[in-house]
Length: 397
Image 1 (cartoon, one colour):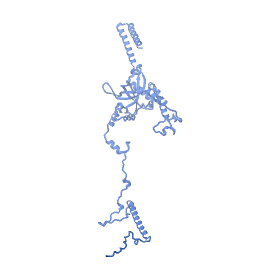
Image 2 (cartoon, one colour):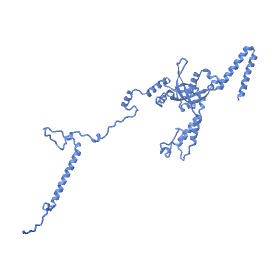
Image 3 (cartoon, rainbow, N blue to C red):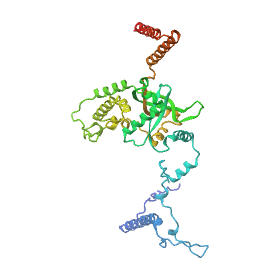
C-alpha cells in the first residue's frame, strides 16, 4: 500500500501584486502629471476650435499639407465661415402703411386696376364736380315736401363773412321761387330749419334737360324735442365733484386736474367736460329760431355766426370725405347738413282753400254783373257767398 503524502499548501494567485507597486509617492505624481497633461491638451483643442473661425488671414495655427499635390491649400482662416449671429435671424420684410411712403407699394397699388369702390367714388366725384369749378364753399338749401324737395347749392365766396352768406342764400332762394314770392303774403318765408339732405339726382326740365346745378331729393328733420330732453338729462345726471375741473371761457376747454377720472381711466370722460358740452349744445339749440331772422335780414348774422358753428358750410374736401363713409355708396346715402326754407304756401291747406274761396267769390260777382247788368245785384250775390262761407266755418268750429 502506497503511502499517502500530505499535499503541500495550495497557493492562490494574488489579485494584487505588491511587488509591482512602488512604495514611494513618485508613482502617484507621475500618474497625476500624465492626467493633467491630457486635460490641458483637451482644453487647448477646445480653445482652438472656438477661436478658429475668428483667426485672420495668414494666422493659421495648423498648416496643412496636401499629399497629392505640392502646392499648399489656403489656410483654414481664409475659408469664409458664416456668422451665426446673422444667419440665425430671419430676414423680415416690413410692409409700411398705406401713407404714400412706400414706393414699391404705391407702384403695385397703381398698377392694379381700380376696384368697384374707386370707380364709384370717381362717378360721384364727377357728379359733384360742377359745384366746385371755382373751388368755393357751398351751403345746401332746399324747399318743398319732405319726400320730394328741390335742392340748390349756394356758392359762398367767403365762409367767414356770414352776412354775405345769408344774403346769397336769400337771393338764390327768391331767384328760384320767382320775384312774386317775395311780396305775396302766402309765399312769405316763415321758418328756416337745419335738416339732413339727400340728393336723388339732377332736376330736369320738361324737355328732360338739366336746369343747371339744381337737384331733387329728400330731407329729414331733426327731432329737436328729443334732443333737448337728452341734453337736459345729461345735465341733470351730473354729480358735483369735490374738486371740479375748471372751464376756461377764453379757450372753450376744460382743464382736468391730476386727480380727475381721465388720468387713471382711458375710457372715462371728465364729468365737467360732459356737462359743459351738453350745456353749450343746449344753448345753441335754443338759438335755432334766429335762422329765420338771419334769412329775412342778413345783418343779424354779423354777431351770430351760426352757419359755421352748425357745420353748414361744405368744402370740396368735405364732400370727398363723405364718399368714403360706405363701400360703393349710393348717391342718396351721401347726406349733407343744410337749410330747409319753408313758406306759408307749403303744406298749408287753409291758405289754399282761402285763396280758392276768394277767387270763386270774385268770379261770382263778375258773373252776376254780366247776367243782371247791375252792380247792386252783383254785390248782393257776393255778400251771400261770404255769409254762406262764414256759416260753414262756424258749423265746423
